[in-house]
Image (tube, rainbow, N blue to C red; front, side, top):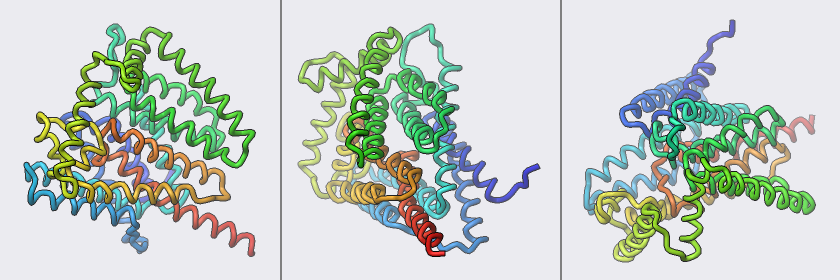
Length: 397
């Protein structure tokens, strides 16, 4: 029988918490279960830190996150709704606490790999849950039983990126079967964002992984073209996928090419962005108060991370939020002699970069899963340096 240790308890709680982000976060009444698991994760990790007398780490991501939260809190003094600001700041502080905890826990490549594995398995269970509980006699966007379909699609998209890392980096080809399950489930959510996210991330990750070989890049571009053609056929020629996501993709393409579309959500979000730009012009430096866009525009948020931050906190909050992400992406591109670590770096880089590109289509500054991944990504540099030092030490022996 395997001995129960504090490390094993932390691993179990961490997996359950990551799973809860997928299953409970977007369901009314279940969020308290996820928060309870977060408390247990935080408590157990800090107990380990105290018992092992580890030095507490506080990196630049955490510093900027605190500064961003302070900037959000200051907006309460002039916000349209002070209650909304303080409520959002409370959420951001709780997210920060978990980020701080993860930064102080993940200090080895083995721990990093486990967290990646947990995200993959969480995506697997989420996909199975959607397939088992959905009524396929009615064609609609599936996954609503877990909350917002776009958020669910993005979460499974993250799992697919990490699954691809395991297949490519660790040569565990059996995970291809899991990958084949994840992609159709993303399409079943009908999320255009998740579809674009997966395509952008995969192509970027493969280009970075093969960037030193021109012949490999050419082969990759050819293979990517074939995959895109296959995906095009899959979306537009298979009836169920066409009705769920194909029509939505067609509408998006029409909008981008200047054609008029009848889809209300696209037109409304375009209008939200236009109004947001006008609101920002009137208060460009400090904004109107975090999460106060909804009081300027009919009681709903902007569905645009750029606009939400610019209108809520002005240029100051916007810069405090995005500058550290640029720094983390730069660090993730540092060279590593370990190919597995390099591919992990590229995985996190493509996730962060793809979210940035998709910022005009979703709001994620207060997203649990994204901010936790950002905190985890900020530990990769230290792990990379320690791995390089270990290799150099072995050579000098």
